[in-house]
Length: 376
Image 1: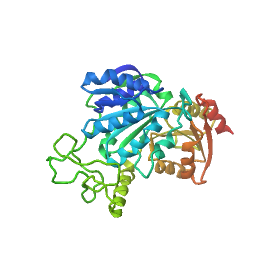
Image 2: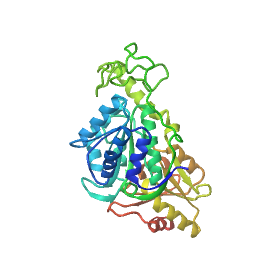
Image 3: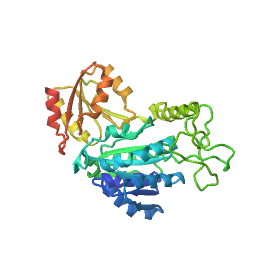
Image 4: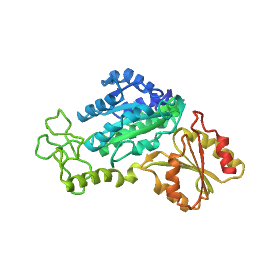
């Protein structure tokens, strides 16, 4: 039996990160993610880790990237405006292949918007926020317990594929308090970073063997010196103008995620076996979807739920399989103006009716609003 505690979502994020091995946090306070910084400041010294408050969000992610290059599992957290500021260095970490977890506890926007109100308006920014083609892995929790579990998974994916992983929480889950039973240490998988068995410069830092997608690199301070740059580079880490090398690099970065879709993508389906109508949701919106499904079933509608746990890559294979079973209607419920709606429309391709329930005024989607769409 694990330890039973009353815990806030933001607190669970930190505890899950620490359980995964996070020992460095750099951040800057911003509602509704500030508790992540506060709990990190308290907890990291207790486990031999380091916390630092930087002067802004740009410096925060840069500092976390620097810590990660030494082999230290690092995290930074923010909300919408700060997430915007992190985008350039997020792209840097993608290209330099620096493992990192970036938490975005979403709030209403645009600009500084409504700082204490729920939103899921950063979903497309998570995919396209930084410039150029780059790999994207983004997860979204729907409970405090799952926040703890997915924080661990975020670090595991970051280390396994040497790429930043985005943890797309929202204000609903970040500030939610629930009783949870935390798993015992050692009862869950923790993936640590691979390093060459022998230190030295016998192989370049970004050397890739045939069929390999993720380089095995020495951590800074462990005996081998190499270059890291934000420019397209060769296997030594130094910039290159060779178009063939540059093209292969970007293709490999994308393949790290694309060719490991099955390992990365997770969804939850509830009562979809006989469903004519499916509520598509993610994150905190799941709460309203569960009540709406129950109410719709009581009214005689064959209603189920499809929840995206992995937002990016978008779970199109799983959604496509569900549509092929004969689903007649998908009701997309999300706290934005229709960001995942576009992805659902892309996959559905006119094969079923698609309806939308969205909120952008700082209030929560209510179950009866979803039921009304089902009935309408």
